[in-house]
Length: 399
Image (cartoon, rainbow, N blue to C red):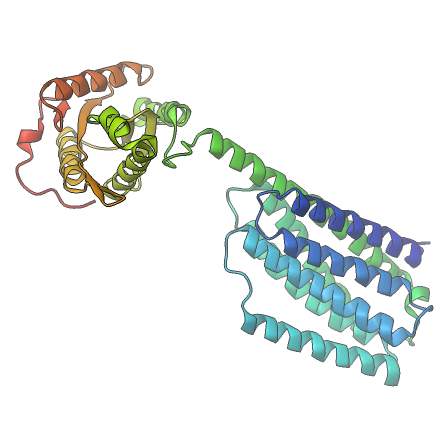
């Protein structure tokens, strides 16, 4: 026989652990959005379980009101956290007002069916229907996430629990017998309390796994990102290149490499200081992101040298794109502390050949074209192709 008080104690313990874990993340300033919502949500769940446990020690009406209302609030806050965690807009003030109205109306209904017409089955139907709707909404939001595996797993558990809650509430309403006390209820209610414990454990594990997976993704992204410009770093370049090379070998999609170097960068550092040099690098990175397509990939290779991977792109399109970039950079000097710092860039271009196992040789050819542009007077585009910048006489449409 399942003892309801024992299960409630275990439920409270689960919520206590989840609240403590959330508070620990908050004090350690873990870079995850919405940790305060987790503390509030699991805290509401904890107080809800305590309210149910105190049935018999405090008036039943208070236990029902606090327990059920806080249980609903717990799920709503967790849903709001899910939205924040996924980068969606959090619930608005109007939505919170609507939620408050629903909880208030439910509380009035609980009061009636405790103080006037004591009917636990109607209370079960109301609470579990609302719980089920929130659970389905939360689960639907989570299962649609593609980049975090544990979101789908947690979402499935929310969908299952939401479906169970609606079915359980409906069955309870249709099969209600004579009124009973919650703590002396029959097998159906006892099983539902056990199911809520299992769901609480799964939710806590799911949330912690989602956070852990997101933190791992953030660390991996930081390891592949240049902190100054926000572009990919050398490590990210070779990782992305391996993917492109595989597509080249499998689908024969062309891969074009642009190597770009800011002209006379050292003189800017010497004359204006290293902060000016950093500002110039960020300025150039911003121009790159505006000029290239969303399908192109940009990297800071080191120092003032940058690399772009273009796939797919033909020879003339790559050269003309580089020429347009060169003109744009020259036309956009860096404005810094009242000074206008002229900026130019030299660009070398090469394509990768299908028989090459990686981008090493193609990168070398692009470097050689870059050195040729430097030797030719800087602020130039040179290519290992037969197509040259001089061939791009007509305007090139913006991408």
